[in-house]
Image (tube, rainbow, N blue to C red):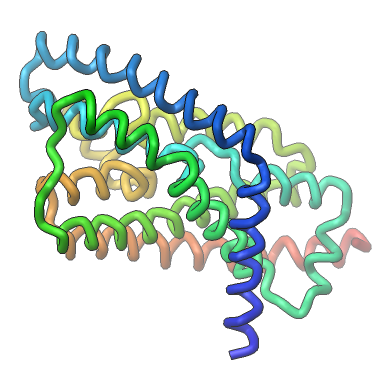
Length: 266
């Protein structure tokens, strides 16, 4: 119980920390809304030329855009969460303080990132999504149970996103400079996360591959669930499977990184 209260407090701290950046939140809402508008009109033109591309109609394509803008910062699809701070702490050696805490390194950062994600969903994600729903035709369900399943999928997506970025952050123990790893994260998030185009629209073998990667658990799976294109249980199983695998790999890499710090005298 004591550990649960500790990590709950860390999550609350993560939420409050990002809630203090009000100007940044407003700027983020504006940016996501503008990018959403640009993408919507691009998608509408594309779907005029290629109706039912990826199995979506125009309303589903528009819905996918606004879900992407709502979840972009929430899931830190191209980075921008805790990983930059952790890599900097590795570079400066301040990570030694984290290792001395009476708390697990992975769970500590997971709790803080979940708090950040929740704030970004409420503070930055809701407004662009509402704008999209009000001014464009969308394919949203009336069933409240489907909305509840969608929220569960979003929480699982938060965990998968954290697990991906935790591995990227741990690379700093070996690379020392996380710039390259962060740039790779940005590119893979854009391409494999569905921010440029729904993964359903990727052709042939490429589409089959990207839809099996963990990035598919971030946006594509929750979007398909909400629009009735995927069974909730299969979505949950896919997301939970990747969460378990990636968190497990993260613990192994964390153990190796900790031994490396000891060897280096950190």
